[in-house]
Image (cartoon, rainbow, N blue to C red; front, side, top):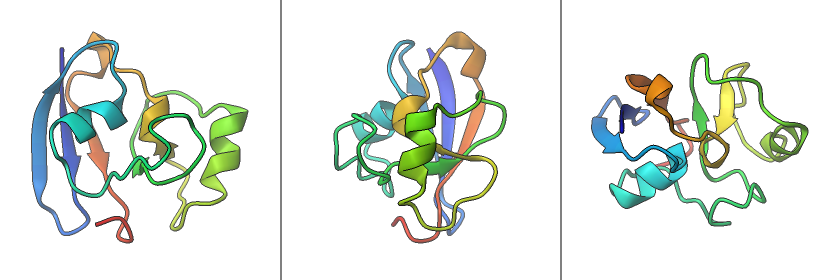
Length: 101
């Protein structure tokens, strides 16, 4: 398990335990974190799980293509459906873009 803190654009924090092997997106959905819609269910076919994170690895080419459809993309933008939770991610902070409420 890893403790992940999701921070809404307005500053509200949601600190949750996410089971190893799930994705950061699945952790948000299972814990009712607002702002991660995951319209495609985690298939990397939309950008409704766009987040800002530090040090989680480099996005794949497919993920980078999907980020083209997201708003407010920054160098640390990722799709949360593409970040697999491991013990190494314990303490991860995930920030949500302003346009995802």
